Amino acid sequence: DCPGKEGTGGRKRNLTLLRNKLYMGQRRRTEPVVESTTTAGDLGNLRRSQSDRTEYSQKLQEKMAPQVVSSTPATPPQEDEEEVSRRMMAKRVKIIAELMQTEKDYISDLDLCIKEVIQPLRNKQIARFDVDGLFSNIELVHQLSAKLLSLLEEATTDVEPSMQIIGEVFLQIKGPLEDTYKIYCYDHDDAHTMLEYYEKDEELKQHLRDCVQSLK
Image (tube, rainbow, N blue to C red; front, side, top):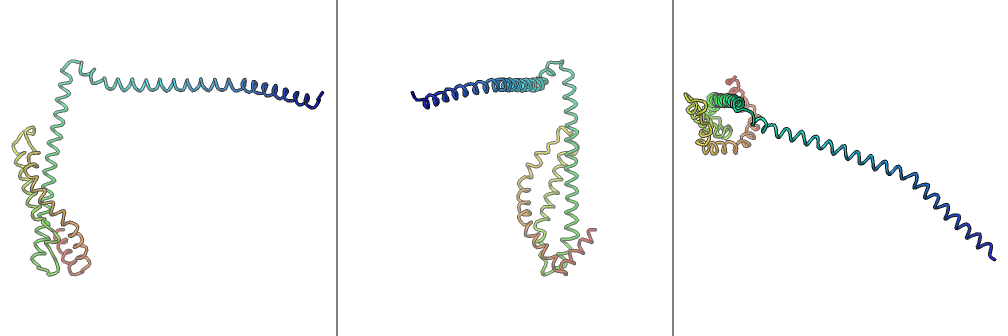
């Protein structure tokens, strides 16, 4: 009785069928893609897992290697240990000798500084030149270094390398080292400032040049 309404109902049914067809078609197109993507992802995870296992196996073999070596006969490892011990002892002897030579060179430099710079400047008695302020307690540093070298020589002269106890030397002189260098380091910045001031004065600067020339 109402053609307009029947037309509307038909159009609604047609739209419903069209939506269903489009949905099914879209589903058929997307399902294979999703499935293939998931499969690729699973394979990727599997490959990473296998790589992790290989890396872990290699690390495990490396960690197990010392145990495998320790299970071999005792003679080769003993020879290796003796060789390592010999090399370490030779290295220790070299380090001690280098330490002592460095201390000798340091004492020689301090000795030159005192004889060729500090003492001549003191003898000139320059009113505007504070020698003690510029060089702080460097003469005590010289004495302490000489004492340290003496103790090192005493600990190493006519003593087998394996019996040379060097650490004890530094423990003996630890207190004086701290006390002496504490003062020297504390005065360092002031001495540097003082030197910069003296270098701006041509007369005082010439005295320093004379000392440097004497050293050369």
